[in-house]
Image (cartoon, rainbow, N blue to C red; front, top):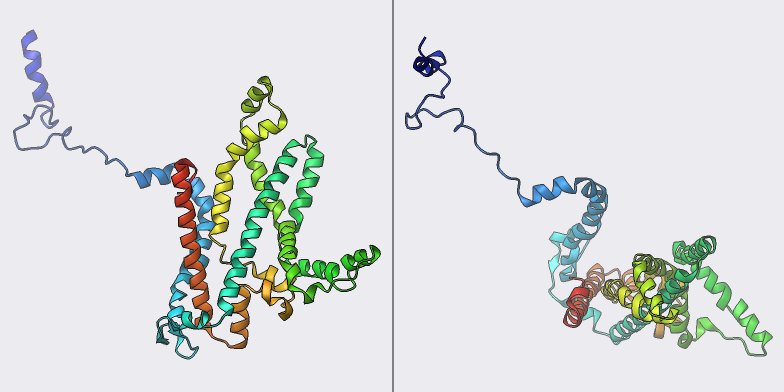
Length: 342
């Protein structure tokens, strides 16, 4: 066989292969019929990459949706004359009358001031105490001592306000430990549950005792995340321990402090009901300095049974808290954009 006859024999040997068809013959070739796979979008890529983390977060997301977002539909009760007979959607619209009732008396401004003033004390003093405790625990080198101290500080956070109220009553009653100590010093006993002027200080001390340990552990975790290289460089330059805290620890802790403060400011109109209701034992003698929005609304709902007014107060708290978070975050962005929450 001649050499030039071999190429001509190859197409005839495989007539149905499609390799010898010209591109303009009207019949698609095997190679041109395959389409490239579409590239997955950004959302799909993110799910594939972080699928395990999203699965872990799913229970928390569902709980947040069920208990925080679904109930938002009930906010319309604040604008209705709610009755159990007609339900949420069948009750009559009354506009802003529930809000007018809430602010019709002088009590509205008193409870608003008490809420802001006491929560302001809790946030400011609690921040100072929590950061100080975190700095002290960071300097404790013994792991055993550190574990014991952290557990002791965190334990009050796990206690119910009902139990804490009995502790406070045992200390502050007319025959309690505080009055016994005062009598031992020759000082007349103080009737704490009849004198409202003492309670801003008492409530602040009780709040810090219960919550400072929890916040201090958050700040301690942030401090432990700071690179040791900063401290080693500072030691080489001759910086003292206080200088290291001032110029390294506190500046690097500021972003966490800002986030925690903004989150607390968002709930500054929400008083800790257990603290103000149980610890004060709902004593009418103390309303001048301890009555806040939450306790006032609960008492009005219990005595009057007006669901619309209680919903209006909750709506008022949520809107003002939301505005405070946005305003505070805006101020932080103006000062330092990188340290803002969003």
